[in-house]
Length: 324
Picture 1: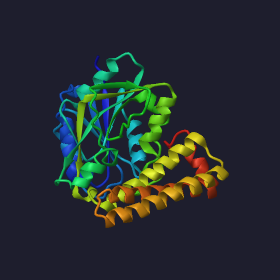
Picture 2: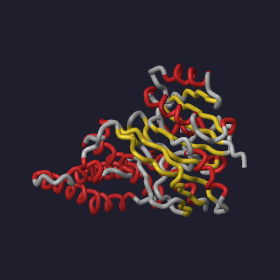
Picture 3: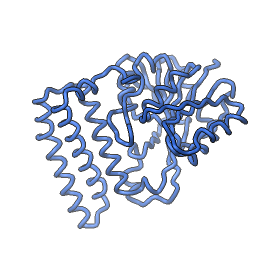
């Protein structure tokens, strides 16, 4: 079947890696006339537009440029989806290198008769520098948006960890489910992004698939191999999980207080003190424990905001986030 695909790349001031990403997507084995690339420029101040126009001028694949002034990756992704001319939306990031068979292999799963609406695949690291041992031991996973399952194919009604750097969705399902929830807005995470979208899709009764043959690589610079980055990454995960849990359970203010004082605060101090103890003993697991203390601190902050800000509670419970 001749399935058409719009590849959507949100970007902000990353022309060096963006160029690598686009070129890897132009080199796909998938028929050139069946896919397009949409660059959703999220208000960049560098030469992103000029780069895209240059590449578009010599490309067999149609390349579209979209300027999205509202700062936030979800704004960029959702707006790009609205100008798509395709049956499928493939989302990736501006620091990825796709294997040349990536698109061909991920499309194949939709030929299976399992009500599949979303698919992902392997996301392997492309280290800019040799990572320290503790990164490989504790953080070579979703922390760095990596996924490497041993199975060649999974079809399930569970979210097994599909990330928006390697995710393809039926366009009609994407709009039926209200698009991406808020994620990073002005360098600050405020919601649950693709996690929220995936939950909405699963709640509609659709299935997810994983293709081990569909491979892309995530460029990981030295700046992401630091304790500071990992603390921030876990802080964001705390916000994401707080957003997700409240949308699922819509806790009363009383129950949020109980959650904070019975769970978040004890776990915050347990991990913080354990990280200090493990560091003094020279055990590298202190890095994971320190990151977890940041996770629970931001879970606590998020839930306190839900208690004291009624407008925020209403915002978190919105059905879609195309406009707000």
